[in-house]
Length: 363
Image (cartoon, rainbow, N blue to C red):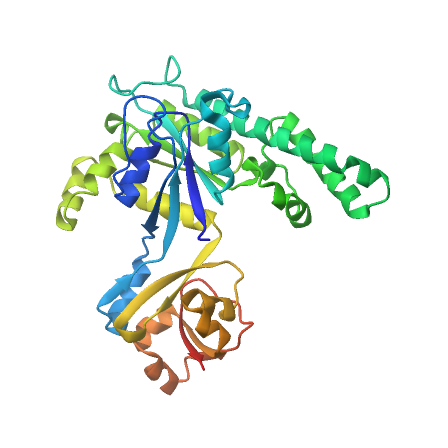
């Protein structure tokens, strides 16, 4: 299954607007809570300036960006871990995501109801994170209770798991997300089967009003402070405005951005951060007149990269010719690079690096 980012937050924080802006899926948006019940799912192309350059050097007419899956998950409310607001159903959708984008409302609108009396991003973040922590605490306590007897009767594996669960439980009781508890790789592997919500990497999205663009406002600062406290990144933009920009022709976009004092689209930055959050890098191929960017997990081999393209390519893998995208721009083709001795030949265990252009040889 493709890796996916789940967009979460309180009701009417702008989740569906963000989703529509990046996917153009046309999911329902309304000014009342729980307009979204079943999750909306869409594929999002990842902006990458290198792709156009590589395509130009190779003379490719067709360009295909890497993509990721984004899921618009219904809003959480206080008491969600107890089932409030269909919370159990929505928490299950979050468990299926590989990373989380936490949308935080930083705008006022008489047409969009807020589930709380006032706009307070710090408190909104605290409500959602508390619900995720409480849900994880229940999961950890339940698992610990199930294996306690086996751990006491000499099962060393279960005893180690109980030890890790106890450590995590203490952290959750102190309101510390699993991802912020400094667990090592072995401890995270022990927890993997529990699909803990707060173990997932997160990015915070400050969803601004148009009047706040270009300002270092109090609400945006509150989101940044909360994110920095747990070592997470923040991106700030107006989802409503950028969804309107997405409807414009390319030559109209720059004029629109300048009118609002925006240098670059926040949505592009958001997608790029989500891509990195999933632990992905990009490699390029330029065969048959098509230049394509492929998403790949950090630490993947050339054999695994071949499998991303086609299983037959993985099964019949012989070798991979590899060069950096910068070198490819200089030579324009593998043939020219070979003549200069610039194309490397790598085997199946070679670890692919971000931005490499690869030509696979297979039987």
